[in-house]
Image (tube, rainbow, N blue to C red):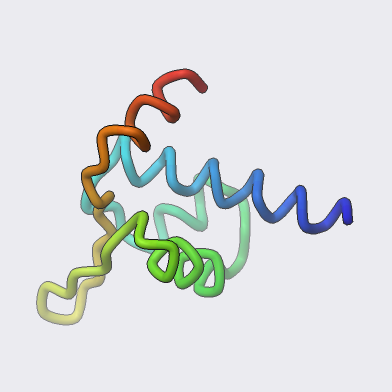
Amino acid sequence: MASKNAREKTLSKMLLLIVKNPGIRPSELNSRLNVAHSASLRSTLIKRGLVQKRRKGVAVHYYPIRRPELIRNLAKQ
């Protein structure tokens, strides 16, 4: 159970980074979270409808999906 809580905490941190830094690239997310790979975490946020992935040429960028309740909840953290 502890690993599920740790994963959710990491997901929250990642979402907060994306909200505060729209257009952030995967390498920057990995660096700031001190993880080697974050593809499964990013995929989870996309599936939950919290972020979107946009490709610009070969570069990939992540943006938050604007949801007022999400912004309010993150602002409390």
